[in-house]
Length: 333
Image 1 (spheres, rainbow, N blue to C red):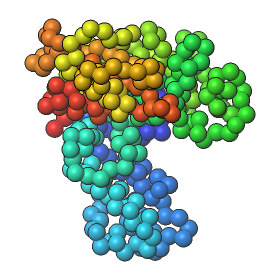
Image 2: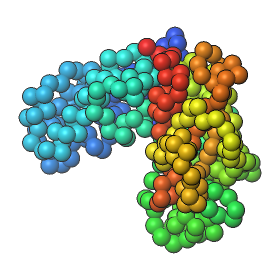
Image 3: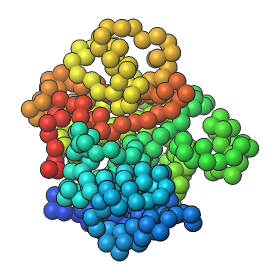
Image 4: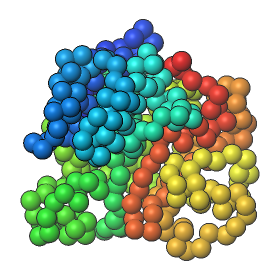
């Protein structure tokens, strides 16, 4: 199988007997190499020594006084967050278990960036033998903010950070619509160019068509199924829908904050105005096997995904782990 998402550090980890990712010294050292933690030229001696000591022994205990001795306030904040995060990882055998604890109410202040990185690593583990670039691109929605654009009758998702980091001169109609510069090479993922995803996967420069009835939403449904199977040992069937009418909304989950607001409105019987309806990106019906509501022929669970008023899509995969009626389940202790 071909490799992908090389920059996430998956090659620095090992699996335990249950298929979870073990927290390795090499992975911890990769976090220490991040620019936020690498001492800048003006760093004090105490910060440089702390960094050197942790590179030599990334599991080395670090106390509050040692961090408090750092001269720069931003450095003290960054190191406090990092050490708390590291210690949380070390308290759990696998990254999956650490993540489940974090999203389930673990009392650790964790930067959103760290959460996104864990999600990417877990997904890289889940999709290790996947040979479908559409599933891999859809999985990026779990850890990368997307900017949504209607173009040529399609609803397209492009990586927001990729767009923001580029210039201004348009290169093609898609680039022009997204405000992406000539230096960028943004393509819509298709059967014709899907093979190029493998060499581009770390650039996050392929847009995904999330139009109703097309391949992108179906691929995202498959990713959700694999996420639930891996994290909760839950057998789920996720079906994209074109609309929801006259259904008993007995249980729902918002895949993001906007989707939650839309689900709340429908739950309360409030009509959705035209603006809210236009922000809906995806609707899904989930059937959950087993002894949970919606399983074995019971009422399904509905999933809502929507963009913000400024057309950003920020999926929160933790909502699937904490919001389903099967939230008491977990595959990793």
